[in-house]
Length: 584
Image (cartoon, rainbow, N blue to C red):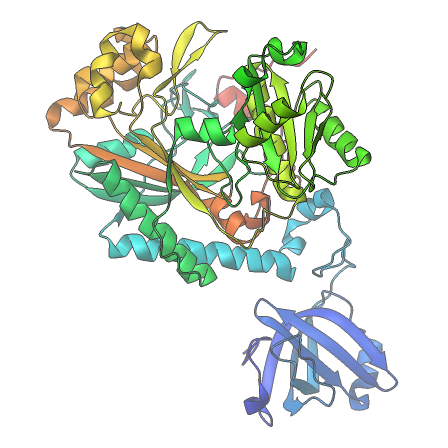
């Protein structure tokens, strides 16, 4: 046997036992004729004591960091105990050791506080995965996976696999396409989600489906986005929106209890999309703190201040206890909103001093009574700081949403150990693109309108009023899941395709299989998909999903360890009937 125990399980009750351990050398410390070695495996670290009787062997075969060794000896009590590790009360007095494999000096220190940068650690990801911090992230990911499966199994859901090689139906993000050697000049696409397949499973009578599944989208990347990502994908038959919300709120609570030991006893609050946009400026509000947006557009006009008079939107927030902000701090905030990512031309402030007086950057245009009115609208109190932005409606609302989050961060109101879940409901079914001069599905083209709005589908002038039977689950300002009640009647689905500008021929070409299935007894159904990577990162207290993926891509969508994507052999290209055009 290579080992009788792991490097994380020996305790005082094992003292006196003969054991064999195998693992990686974390550190080597020599004190005269005695050498101490920290031996590491997936389960922990155990200290080895190598006495002078083995010095000749050590001299002939010196140990280095990341050497793989086998060590035999006896468990003894440590004289200098280490309370920071579970095995810190004991050590192994070694009688024999064998180097199973030597190691080159690693390109970075394999420790929690590593000296390796992101790109270097991605290149040597197999070494980075040895670090305890990364290992703990993958353990958390596994536990979330197991908790979700256990919950869904207990509720009668079946895990059913769906294909990875499917038909491209460009709606939304770009597809990754795969050429077919056996079907020249034709291509598969990798699924952006198993959407149509899970709907077909409902029509096949599998009324509770789930899959923890890889999805693929060829889109620009950021911290919480990868070209391949994982979803907890679920669908149910004979349900309405309330059934979905109740079931998956329960699943979320179960996961939090299993992973974090947190009992979420209260029902998750619900907020309409309209209210989310009005009070928070985005459809995934962070409700760990208040600081709601207040519309000052009408009350700000007519006082001769051109910035307000010409603005589509004047919007404010009240930052609690910030009236003592210095000129330097206010200038920093002004520079912050002027950044290209935010895109505003300036920031207006009103200090509601602790003595009850008000002082602003626009005193020239607004007397104290007007400032008092603004403060009352914002529900501000003495000691608060009112921050105001003005401009085009969409940009200004988005900018104030970002400023609210930034102030929440600066004031310590976004504690990663506090979790505030929320359902956002009643999304618009459509959104209009001025550039394309047509309507798009806000969610996807299989989302049903609210039952009371189905009649509006016959009048294009009413599209902007139609609400979707759709819902998102939001956690700490991040969308962790979203879904909808689906269309299950052919005539309504055809109306939806027509509303999106699809001809009957195009709809039949792309989705004829689904439209046909509707004619054979399709049940009412709906579902949801959780962003598994995002959920894990939030539970782990990280902003980046890459920390919770074993082999992630970098911000350019490259695997720097494999050096992929890469060119392929000309023979392969010829077999696929592909002729490459070299970039100029």
